[in-house]
Image (tube, rainbow, N blue to C red; front, side, top):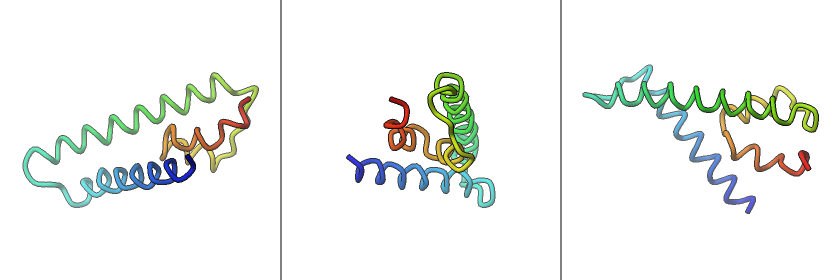
Length: 87
């Protein structure tokens, strides 16, 4: 299972690279706008996810700043790695 999480994290990192690359090297045509919208959506969803984790597990799970950043970047895939600390 751990290798699946690592593969998913690599794919998520690739998605971030593509979305941020669009800022510096805009893709042609309507793809530029689509990637801007996707970047905004991913940022919004990962912030919501991080706030939900802080709200729901603040007493059971003390996140370091590094873990919070990793949850923001990798989303649920990082949370799966630290879920044993919640129980």
